[in-house]
Amino acid sequence: MFKEFLRGRATKARFAFAKAASVAAGAVLAMAIPVTGFAQKAPAAQNTPIKVVASFSILGDMAREIGGEYIQLTTIVGAGADAHSFEPTPKDAKALAQAKVLVVNGLGFEEWLPRLVKSSGFAGTEIVASKGVRTRHLSNNGSAHDGHGHAGDIDPHAWQSLENGMVYARNIADGLSRADPAHAKDYQGRAQLYIASMKKLDTEIKQALKAIPEARRKVVTSHDSFGYFQQAYGVQFISVAGFSSDAEPSAKEVAAIIDQIKREKVPAVFVESITNQKLIRQIGTETRVKVGGTLYSDALAKSDEPAGTYLGMFTWNAGRLIYALQPDVKEKAETKAN
Figure 1 (tube, one colour):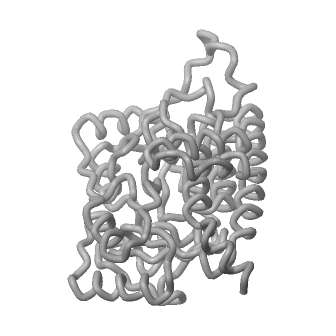
Figure 2 (tube, one colour):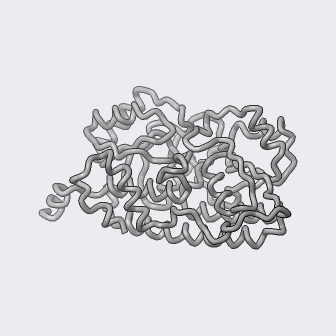
Figure 3 (cartoon, one colour):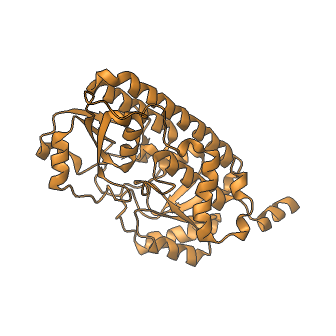
């Protein structure tokens, strides 16, 4: 699957790969292309789209895929923006006041949202996309809570597993169907196509990562947002900070991470699209471990970029990880000799 994009990697510059990795992975994982087939015709005059508000970019993309031409979508926290530090504006309150449907993640992720809902007077259908997912509890895996207000000990980044993404899609389709029964069949049909794409992508990623030696499936990231990816795909993520993208680790914590990287021979460190990249790059320099590039955790890239959709984000992240975790020529020769 990823063989084509891995072939010839040694001859390409790192920046060039950042684009090539996603494009090549996307050639095989074509599910990153928006689902089509239900939204080919413009809505008839008598079928005015219902107004839908999504809390942040990942849910906005999911709602767009499932709602098609039958919804008029507003996304509060847009592409590239940080939902952790977001502050709503009067414009957001106005959009929510006029909406018939609100799509939220839940699990304590949108800490600012209850105030916005109250101030806007929203009285429509609220869809909690994460309803029914198998949540990750921090007390069970030894991670420390960062004190930034997430619900209890629950990790809210459940979308970082495609199996959970399928649950999200079903919840969104069911909620839109309740709010707009006349188009329920269309919402459910689009959701089924979307879920089929997720299943295929999920299988491809699992197969590719399973082929990498377990001892090499370790990376360092900025904050603790890939726990569900870790559980689903067998990659260990070592976070420098906690859940929140603005959490600052102490010097002692950074030193401990550096020691762990050296001791466990972690192959790569990654920056995240919404976090300060300086510290991660500093760690990469001090440990002489390669910086694998950018991963997308809490926000999508711009719509014209490879990680501009939910499936595109997964394709991009998986491609970057697989490239960085592959043993290099020297390591392969040493393994063969032993």
